[in-house]
Image 1 (spheres, rainbow over the protein chains, first blue to last red):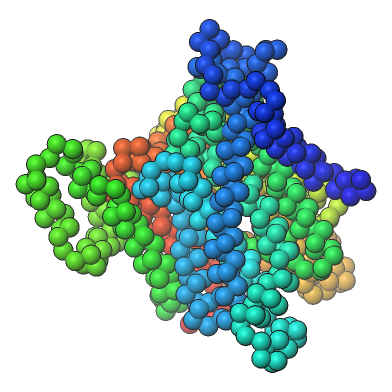
Image 2 (spheres, each protein chain N blue to C red):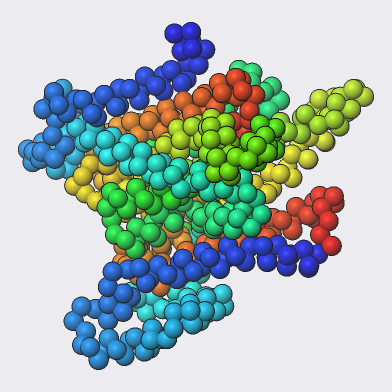
Length: 282
Length: 315
């Protein structure tokens, strides 16, 4: 409770995310919400008692679609962050730990990913492998690799020359032991913060792809796709594009706030420059 | 000086080569090969064979890549599949629109972002800083496409002040028309850009404020306004300039989405149309073009940086 008062932004963020998670994973079990049920007698209705967010062009309940879209969005983002972390963290670890040619080669590869806007890269990749949830997940995941690689590398570089790491090596500990058992456990806090913040970026990117028409293919509900369709009915049903956008925006802002607050808390505790590292141009 | 530029280019060369290899290889990863897309579904085996030879697809892979890169660097990205026009011409037609959008969004970004950064860096962790760092979180977190929709709803649907679809009107030909058509997209992209600017300029300012010369300037009784204006801001702009270069990529990404919201006829729309039509030479051309712009801007920024900061040795 005291923590909630000290960090009101993050507390609100956690509360909002809890509602979204509860609604998306628990509500469908108890409430008769069908995101695909069409009703052509009630198309593009404004919000009513029966349909809190109104209905879309096929008479489907927008709230039900927002809730189902949350599941798509969150699972895609989680998968993307997992890919980015599983690939990015070892890259940063190896580059920072060994330095030399390994560092040069790995970081040059990361530079290549940075040279293209993430969204362009994802669009190009999806153009090649076709539209699917997996394609969106992989494309968004790859764009997150540089973030993890750079933050891990910076952290490892700082830890590399500290006495306890040198001691492990002097005592004959193998490089992999020193890397995974000694350096990595001490480098986790900025990585954790990166996980939270990247989740918000991944949700944003996935929604942007769907908005551009290259995300998860319909009829599966997705927030970005709802905004894309809603934009076509701005005159007939202005709330159609507004309400799903509010949920999307609040989700992104919640995760970002939680991540940054977490960074600040860890910074105060450990004296490490967690947030500063995140604000490095990535 | 020329040596310095060449060295920077040499450092970016691996990035260019690897990325271009990826862009080129894209076509080969497509199910059904580019030939299928070119000749259509009902082509005879002879037609397919003729196309393969015409495109040089029977040659060794590495040779194909080299000849593609060679042509691409000279500005020859091949012909668009849709209407057989040179890809470069299609791209060049869209460039003025994107530049106009980009410049006006930068102005919006600077006007909104620099004061925010200044105000929050001068009293770090104060209430104003907290509120204003909320601004950059908001500016970067609110999806560009949703902000655009909200602006259209307010200014086009409700108030009827501005068009809901933005055409490209060159500012020199018709300044008022250009303003009407550019203001909403520029505001949408500019808010996002201001978030980037504010966050990085604040970090740069904080770094400078800790420096010894600031204490010296203050202790000799210089007014705070002069300390900031004459010393800190000038030095903080240096790292800021490099960041602007590095942020080119996310800037262009934001422009793609913004152009989609307002159906603005820029480079981003061209790319989306190309993807919809599976026009691979055009997709490759657009992405390669963005890559070259990114590398160009980064070299330019480095040179500018060396020019502004006499401490950097570029001999």
